[in-house]
Image (cartoon, rainbow, N blue to C red; front, side, top):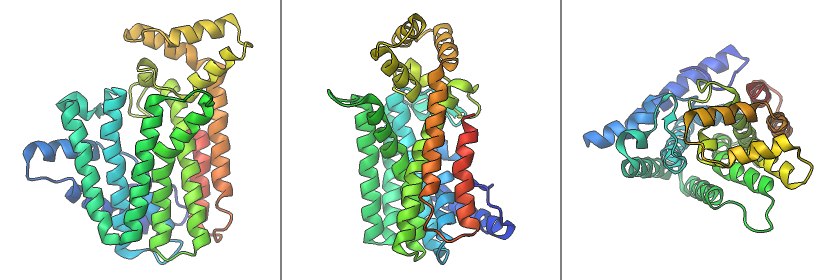
Length: 333
């Protein structure tokens, strides 16, 4: 297991990697089942790998206190299980064919099994977090609620009078930012950090999560798919809102768009089931200025995340968190 966030101090990095190995061991145990189908299907995405950003962030912020001992390892396992569970559900709702470079679970076993595997992993996460005490259970429950509300609001879209861009940013904060925020919060909280430190890393985590997802919106259009582990243009094909499309839609609605902008939006709103048509839509949107605007938004949210770190003591942990946020800007370049 390599470090999900670059850490400048060799001793700290080695300690975190060793503890991530413990998280990995717990993940394997938590996804094991006596039932053969459940065992294979629930391990599917865990075995495919992933950055393990969330548990690493938990272990890293625990270093701001006493390290959190085994509690931080358990909490790291909880947040990764929760993340994995959400991916099973998200891929069903988004009809995503690929996740982490492998076929999505619903593409292998069908929607019903994929949804049940997500539920199973949520249950395992709940069982683990119960050992961390009632406060941790409440935080996990509140985050789970935000994950659900974020998915609901993404599904139904903005209501009359809502700004579509603001609506989307709130969806990102709920669907992505909330769990990354919980990951950072668990580490600081369980290691005995002062309240202002817990608050700081929580705010950092939420803003980093939004930046991370905005960067993904760019990568989905500009990469071959190897970076994100998803098929480029999947969201476009399913007409799932992303920031570049929302910015283009806002431009056209403003009356300041040119004919090429209007034509591009019409293409994006058309049937994109044909691979060649989808590829053309991806290529056209990739060259539009709304992609650069989305990249700029990702950078702004990353900078705001770093600003949240002001109350933290100077040191390797603060440096690593700051470097990671800045790296999100490079990731979308």
